[in-house]
Amino acid sequence: MKKIEYKRKMSVKYAEKWAYKRNAKYYNFDNIGGDCTNFISQCLYAGSKEMNYNKQNGWYYNSVNDRSPSWTGVNEFYKFLTTNKQNGPRGKEVLQNEIEIGDIIQISFSENKYTHTLIVVDIKDVNNLNEIYTASHTFDSFKRRVSSYKFEKLRFIHIEGIYKY
Image (cartoon, rainbow, N blue to C red):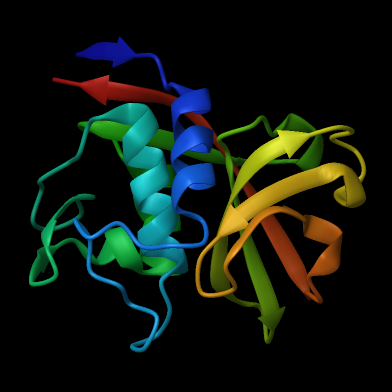
């Protein structure tokens, strides 16, 4: 096993380029449930360059019909990041003050169900949601303040590294 550096700035650069448009290499899920986690997976891949092709619990995208549930599903993405022991990115749920640019935030709007995924693109004050800036699809945005969302709960996922076997 080899730990590879997560290139956070590459993920943010990708988010900036594609926040208000769609990369033709990936299917646009806007009209069938939302494109947020698909977009965040693309951002994460831009900074990691390592997928996990495990058919049971991997994280990969070859085409709209050949992708893992974790590439596009909010909760599947969370489960992959926080339990992955093979190739690809690994993350852990952390407190707000432990996040960095390139990390992930997921939003629960109601009923304790997480339904939206964001990537952190800038931080002025990690302790203030008004000073943490994100990007996403479905609600297309770049440098949107976390505080601008009307949410019930947030969870913060710190990307610990990228692993390759």
